[in-house]
Image (tube, rainbow, N blue to C red; front, top):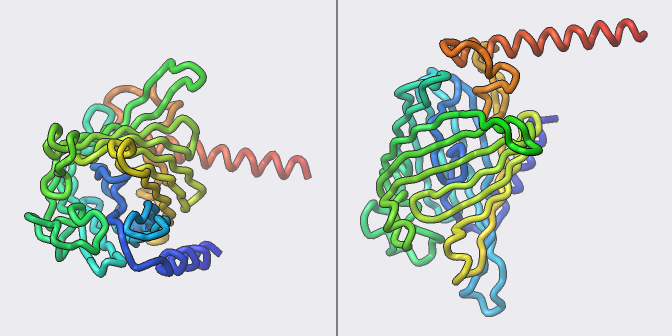
Length: 303
């Protein structure tokens, strides 16, 4: 059933108007996360982008799409492929330098837009492409991500938060007022106020973006608001992304929840400081198995 649904979503995404807005599975919206997926874990995402088509006589809403596939390799890196309706195809790679612990962050280095036909310099000679600057070839970046727990927030209690900061070249740099000030520096904040629901806000080196994501098992749907800095002088731009996670070939020890704040369990924060994330995840899996066994025993007793 899951396979059929994933195929249907892919066909739906490929049936759109042949224009594209450049995306990939970055972990946030446009800001790359420093996290690297486990070996052979894969993710497919269909990115849908809506914006006013001012060149049209009727000023209609245009629909763009992109499809991205990511896979983790050897627990040390990640590779992705992106196809767009603009007939621009590119790859992105990411290598892990440091893995997150309770004291250390994730640290990764990556390259976006490998093999893109849009050059690194003077990328605006493509009038038929939406936001051609975001396709700029060989955009190198360094990203640092850390999961923290904000405590004592009214009505929310403990709030898992994922902080990402970094800097990059080419596609991370722009000409808007904000972009000229930050000079390729990007920042993202991801909050999980409710389990399986996250709120994202970020500065991607060009502009402000925001998003809301809901996850159900291996599926996720995200609503995105793009280029908020330009909303005062241009019409707003929206996006909707559907993704599916493949973990069939991932070892049980490395298989994790589809949660950006997967590195923490709210009930394990008081664990000793030297405990590693792998140990925390192992403890959580043991507790979940025990809870499942207790639930089975309760059902048998009721029968």
